Length: 141
Image (cartoon, rainbow, N blue to C red; front, side):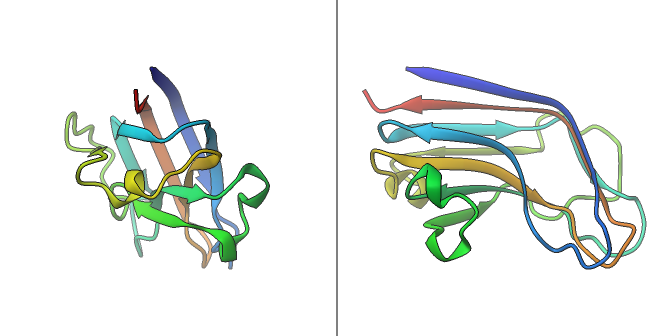
């Protein structure tokens, strides 16, 4: 079966020295997946200075382990660094994986948890905006 999730708009401002992760969505994985696609219409930062914003898919062994970095199984950077530009780039912000080629999907087992999360960046003044984010997952049949 399939499941689809959407996050129409996300904005986060980082406090100075805030280098942690922000959880956007957590998906329990009752059985392994064989396909995932994540895409966004826009993914941009504050528009000046250092670029630090990133979006990740993180695999955890169970729901109780989410956020315990010592127990993280896998961490995939979806789009690289957020750009300064706010210009929409339809079709360019896409992460797609299938079980034949993806270590992330090959590493999944029953009971794992998949988390969509971001890192805005620290140092003060950093912002991260995500517009039109949606993702689709498919379980193995």
